[in-house]
Length: 248
Ligand code: NDP
Image 1 (cartoon, rainbow, N blue to C red):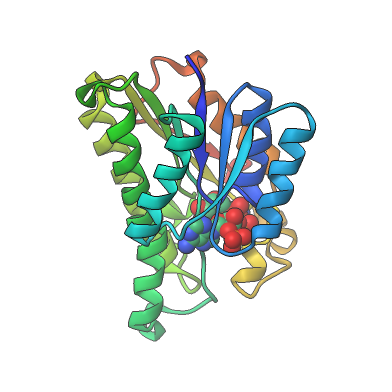
Image 2: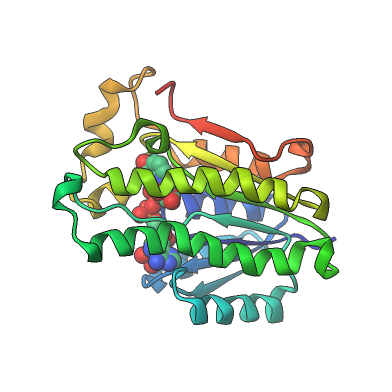
Protein backbone atom coordinates (compact mmCIF):
# COMPACT_ATOMS: atom_id res chain seq x y z
CA UNK A 1 0.00 0.00 0.00
CA UNK A 2 1.26 3.50 -0.84
CA UNK A 3 1.97 5.52 2.29
CA UNK A 4 0.69 9.10 2.08
CA UNK A 5 0.88 11.54 4.97
CA UNK A 6 -0.40 15.04 5.64
CA UNK A 7 1.48 16.99 8.28
CA UNK A 8 -0.32 20.20 9.19
CA UNK A 9 2.19 22.92 9.96
CA UNK A 10 4.80 20.70 8.31
CA UNK A 11 6.88 23.62 7.13
CA UNK A 12 8.64 24.54 10.39
CA UNK A 13 9.58 23.22 13.82
CA UNK A 14 8.30 19.81 14.93
CA UNK A 15 6.22 19.44 11.76
CA UNK A 16 9.20 19.95 9.46
CA UNK A 17 11.33 17.42 11.38
CA UNK A 18 8.44 14.94 11.18
CA UNK A 19 8.05 15.57 7.43
CA UNK A 20 11.73 14.80 6.77
CA UNK A 21 11.64 11.66 8.91
CA UNK A 22 8.36 10.45 7.33
CA UNK A 23 9.92 10.82 3.88
CA UNK A 24 12.84 8.64 5.02
CA UNK A 25 10.28 6.02 6.08
CA UNK A 26 8.78 5.97 2.57
CA UNK A 27 5.81 8.29 2.92
CA UNK A 28 4.76 10.69 0.18
CA UNK A 29 4.52 13.84 2.30
CA UNK A 30 2.04 16.71 2.02
CA UNK A 31 3.65 19.66 3.82
CA UNK A 32 0.91 22.03 4.95
CA UNK A 33 1.60 25.62 5.94
CA UNK A 34 -0.42 28.76 6.68
CA UNK A 35 1.53 31.61 5.11
CA UNK A 36 5.29 30.97 4.91
CA UNK A 37 5.59 29.28 1.51
CA UNK A 38 9.40 29.62 1.47
CA UNK A 39 9.77 27.41 4.54
CA UNK A 40 7.37 24.80 3.11
CA UNK A 41 9.18 24.82 -0.25
CA UNK A 42 12.49 24.25 1.54
CA UNK A 43 11.15 21.13 3.32
CA UNK A 44 9.82 19.83 -0.02
CA UNK A 45 13.18 20.57 -1.66
CA UNK A 46 15.06 18.64 1.04
CA UNK A 47 12.75 15.62 0.67
CA UNK A 48 13.02 15.58 -3.13
CA UNK A 49 16.81 16.01 -2.95
CA UNK A 50 17.07 12.56 -1.37
CA UNK A 51 14.62 10.96 -3.81
CA UNK A 52 11.41 11.31 -1.78
CA UNK A 53 7.97 12.57 -2.81
CA UNK A 54 6.58 15.75 -1.31
CA UNK A 55 4.21 18.62 -2.04
CA UNK A 56 3.66 21.93 -0.28
CA UNK A 57 0.01 22.76 0.32
CA UNK A 58 -1.30 26.00 1.80
CA UNK A 59 -4.39 25.99 4.00
CA UNK A 60 -5.35 27.59 7.27
CA UNK A 61 -6.54 24.53 9.16
CA UNK A 62 -9.37 26.45 10.82
CA UNK A 63 -10.85 27.46 7.42
CA UNK A 64 -13.19 24.74 6.13
CA UNK A 65 -13.04 25.69 2.44
CA UNK A 66 -9.23 25.84 2.53
CA UNK A 67 -9.09 22.42 4.22
CA UNK A 68 -11.43 20.90 1.62
CA UNK A 69 -9.32 22.33 -1.20
CA UNK A 70 -6.14 21.02 0.45
CA UNK A 71 -7.48 17.46 0.65
CA UNK A 72 -8.59 17.60 -3.01
CA UNK A 73 -5.08 18.63 -4.03
CA UNK A 74 -3.56 15.79 -2.02
CA UNK A 75 -6.08 13.26 -3.43
CA UNK A 76 -5.20 14.37 -6.96
CA UNK A 77 -1.42 14.18 -6.48
CA UNK A 78 -0.88 11.31 -4.02
CA UNK A 79 -4.20 9.46 -3.70
CA UNK A 80 -6.03 8.90 -0.40
CA UNK A 81 -4.22 9.66 2.85
CA UNK A 82 -2.98 6.86 5.05
CA UNK A 83 -1.62 9.07 7.84
CA UNK A 84 -2.36 12.48 9.38
CA UNK A 85 -0.38 14.49 11.90
CA UNK A 86 -2.44 17.30 13.45
CA UNK A 87 0.57 19.43 14.28
CA UNK A 88 -0.37 23.01 13.30
CA UNK A 89 -0.74 24.96 16.51
CA UNK A 90 -0.28 28.43 17.94
CA UNK A 91 0.44 30.15 21.24
CA UNK A 92 -0.13 33.77 22.19
CA UNK A 93 1.63 36.25 24.44
CA UNK A 94 1.59 35.57 28.19
CA UNK A 95 -1.65 36.77 29.80
CA UNK A 96 -3.99 35.98 32.66
CA UNK A 97 -7.46 34.62 31.88
CA UNK A 98 -9.04 37.86 33.11
CA UNK A 99 -7.08 39.74 30.42
CA UNK A 100 -7.96 37.55 27.42
CA UNK A 101 -9.97 39.06 24.56
CA UNK A 102 -12.64 37.16 22.67
CA UNK A 103 -10.54 37.53 19.50
CA UNK A 104 -7.58 35.84 21.18
CA UNK A 105 -9.69 33.00 22.58
CA UNK A 106 -11.46 32.37 19.26
CA UNK A 107 -8.18 32.28 17.36
CA UNK A 108 -6.61 29.89 19.89
CA UNK A 109 -9.48 27.41 19.84
CA UNK A 110 -10.08 27.79 16.09
CA UNK A 111 -6.52 26.89 15.09
CA UNK A 112 -5.66 24.37 17.82
CA UNK A 113 -9.01 22.58 18.19
CA UNK A 114 -11.35 23.30 15.26
CA UNK A 115 -8.43 22.89 12.83
CA UNK A 116 -7.65 19.43 14.18
CA UNK A 117 -11.31 18.40 13.95
CA UNK A 118 -11.67 19.61 10.34
CA UNK A 119 -8.51 17.90 9.08
CA UNK A 120 -9.41 14.73 10.95
CA UNK A 121 -12.95 14.71 9.55
CA UNK A 122 -11.60 14.77 6.00
CA UNK A 123 -8.90 12.20 6.80
CA UNK A 124 -11.36 9.75 8.39
CA UNK A 125 -13.54 9.92 5.26
CA UNK A 126 -10.55 8.71 3.29
CA UNK A 127 -9.08 6.19 5.76
CA UNK A 128 -12.07 4.53 7.40
CA UNK A 129 -13.19 1.11 6.21
CA UNK A 130 -16.71 2.46 6.81
CA UNK A 131 -16.15 4.62 3.72
CA UNK A 132 -14.32 1.92 1.75
CA UNK A 133 -10.86 3.11 2.87
CA UNK A 134 -7.82 1.01 3.77
CA UNK A 135 -7.41 2.30 7.34
CA UNK A 136 -4.76 4.69 8.65
CA UNK A 137 -3.16 6.38 11.61
CA UNK A 138 -3.60 9.80 13.18
CA UNK A 139 -1.25 11.52 15.62
CA UNK A 140 -2.31 14.69 17.41
CA UNK A 141 0.11 17.21 18.90
CA UNK A 142 -1.01 17.96 22.42
CA UNK A 143 1.32 19.42 25.07
CA UNK A 144 2.33 18.80 28.67
CA UNK A 145 0.54 22.13 29.15
CA UNK A 146 -2.71 20.10 28.99
CA UNK A 147 -1.91 18.67 32.43
CA UNK A 148 0.15 21.60 33.83
CA UNK A 149 -2.46 24.29 33.03
CA UNK A 150 -0.24 27.23 32.02
CA UNK A 151 -1.24 29.50 34.92
CA UNK A 152 -0.31 33.15 34.41
CA UNK A 153 0.95 32.46 30.89
CA UNK A 154 -1.58 30.76 28.64
CA UNK A 155 -4.41 28.86 30.23
CA UNK A 156 -6.21 29.21 26.87
CA UNK A 157 -3.47 27.32 25.02
CA UNK A 158 -3.33 24.66 27.75
CA UNK A 159 -7.11 24.20 27.65
CA UNK A 160 -7.01 23.86 23.85
CA UNK A 161 -4.48 21.04 24.30
CA UNK A 162 -6.68 19.51 27.01
CA UNK A 163 -9.40 19.40 24.35
CA UNK A 164 -6.95 17.63 22.02
CA UNK A 165 -6.34 14.98 24.72
CA UNK A 166 -10.08 14.29 25.03
CA UNK A 167 -10.45 14.37 21.24
CA UNK A 168 -7.72 11.71 21.00
CA UNK A 169 -9.40 9.39 23.52
CA UNK A 170 -12.87 9.73 22.04
CA UNK A 171 -11.91 9.50 18.39
CA UNK A 172 -9.66 6.50 19.05
CA UNK A 173 -12.66 4.58 20.40
CA UNK A 174 -14.98 5.86 17.67
CA UNK A 175 -12.86 4.56 14.78
CA UNK A 176 -11.15 1.62 16.49
CA UNK A 177 -13.03 -0.96 14.40
CA UNK A 178 -12.56 1.02 11.17
CA UNK A 179 -8.82 0.43 10.76
CA UNK A 180 -7.76 3.77 12.23
CA UNK A 181 -5.50 4.28 15.25
CA UNK A 182 -5.43 7.66 17.00
CA UNK A 183 -2.74 8.73 19.46
CA UNK A 184 -1.14 11.91 20.74
CA UNK A 185 2.31 13.20 21.60
CA UNK A 186 2.66 15.70 24.44
CA UNK A 187 5.91 17.63 24.01
CA UNK A 188 7.43 19.67 26.82
CA UNK A 189 9.81 22.54 26.10
CA UNK A 190 11.09 22.06 22.55
CA UNK A 191 13.46 24.39 20.67
CA UNK A 192 11.31 25.94 17.91
CA UNK A 193 10.17 29.36 16.73
CA UNK A 194 6.80 28.95 18.52
CA UNK A 195 8.26 30.61 21.63
CA UNK A 196 9.22 33.74 19.65
CA UNK A 197 5.70 33.88 18.25
CA UNK A 198 4.50 34.03 21.88
CA UNK A 199 6.90 36.91 22.59
CA UNK A 200 9.44 34.74 24.47
CA UNK A 201 12.21 33.80 22.00
CA UNK A 202 14.47 32.60 24.86
CA UNK A 203 11.77 30.51 26.56
CA UNK A 204 13.35 27.12 25.81
CA UNK A 205 16.72 28.18 27.26
CA UNK A 206 15.18 29.96 30.28
CA UNK A 207 12.91 27.01 31.13
CA UNK A 208 15.65 24.38 30.85
CA UNK A 209 16.55 24.45 34.60
CA UNK A 210 12.91 23.58 35.45
CA UNK A 211 13.02 20.40 33.36
CA UNK A 212 14.16 17.31 35.30
CA UNK A 213 16.73 16.45 32.61
CA UNK A 214 17.88 20.12 32.67
CA UNK A 215 17.54 20.87 28.98
CA UNK A 216 15.03 21.66 26.25
CA UNK A 217 14.16 18.93 23.75
CA UNK A 218 14.87 18.88 20.03
CA UNK A 219 12.34 18.65 17.22
CA UNK A 220 13.84 15.32 16.19
CA UNK A 221 13.19 13.84 19.64
CA UNK A 222 9.50 14.65 19.20
CA UNK A 223 9.42 13.51 15.56
CA UNK A 224 10.75 10.05 16.50
CA UNK A 225 7.81 9.53 18.90
CA UNK A 226 5.32 10.67 16.24
CA UNK A 227 6.82 8.36 13.62
CA UNK A 228 6.69 5.39 16.02
CA UNK A 229 2.99 6.03 16.70
CA UNK A 230 2.37 6.17 12.94
CA UNK A 231 4.24 2.93 12.28
CA UNK A 232 3.13 -0.71 12.40
CA UNK A 233 5.45 -1.13 15.40
CA UNK A 234 2.71 0.53 17.50
CA UNK A 235 -0.10 -1.57 15.99
CA UNK A 236 -1.79 -2.29 19.36
CA UNK A 237 -1.48 1.30 20.57
CA UNK A 238 -4.50 3.59 20.24
CA UNK A 239 -5.99 6.30 22.43
CA UNK A 240 -2.53 6.64 24.01
CA UNK A 241 -0.14 9.45 24.85
CA UNK A 242 3.61 9.77 24.73
CA UNK A 243 5.04 12.62 26.82
CA UNK A 244 8.28 13.85 25.24
CA UNK A 245 9.11 16.26 28.00
CA UNK A 246 12.35 15.35 29.75
CA UNK A 247 10.51 14.15 32.84
CA UNK A 248 8.47 17.33 33.31
P1 NDP B 1 6.17 26.39 15.11
O1 NDP B 1 5.61 27.71 15.52
O2 NDP B 1 7.64 26.21 15.05
O3 NDP B 1 5.55 25.99 13.67
C1 NDP B 1 4.18 26.11 13.48
C2 NDP B 1 3.79 25.48 12.16
O4 NDP B 1 2.34 25.50 12.09
C3 NDP B 1 4.27 26.25 10.95
O5 NDP B 1 4.50 25.33 9.90
C4 NDP B 1 3.08 27.17 10.62
O6 NDP B 1 3.01 27.55 9.25
C5 NDP B 1 1.95 26.23 10.95
N1 NDP B 1 0.69 26.94 11.26
C6 NDP B 1 0.47 27.90 12.20
N2 NDP B 1 -0.82 28.29 12.16
C7 NDP B 1 -1.42 27.55 11.19
C8 NDP B 1 -2.74 27.50 10.66
N3 NDP B 1 -3.70 28.32 11.13
N4 NDP B 1 -3.00 26.64 9.66
C9 NDP B 1 -2.03 25.83 9.16
N5 NDP B 1 -0.76 25.83 9.62
C10 NDP B 1 -0.47 26.68 10.62
O7 NDP B 1 5.49 25.29 16.08
P2 NDP B 1 6.13 24.04 16.85
O8 NDP B 1 6.83 23.16 15.89
O9 NDP B 1 6.83 24.53 18.06
O10 NDP B 1 4.80 23.32 17.38
C11 NDP B 1 4.13 22.29 16.65
C12 NDP B 1 3.04 21.71 17.54
O11 NDP B 1 3.61 21.19 18.73
C13 NDP B 1 1.98 22.72 17.98
O12 NDP B 1 0.71 22.10 17.97
C14 NDP B 1 2.40 23.07 19.38
O13 NDP B 1 1.32 23.51 20.17
C15 NDP B 1 2.96 21.75 19.86
N6 NDP B 1 3.89 21.88 20.97
C16 NDP B 1 5.06 22.57 20.84
C17 NDP B 1 5.92 22.72 21.93
C18 NDP B 1 7.21 23.47 21.86
O14 NDP B 1 7.85 23.69 22.91
N7 NDP B 1 7.68 23.88 20.68
C19 NDP B 1 5.57 22.15 23.24
C20 NDP B 1 4.32 21.44 23.27
C21 NDP B 1 3.52 21.32 22.17
P3 NDP B 1 3.59 29.01 8.76
O15 NDP B 1 5.08 28.85 8.76
O16 NDP B 1 3.02 29.21 7.40
O17 NDP B 1 3.14 29.99 9.77
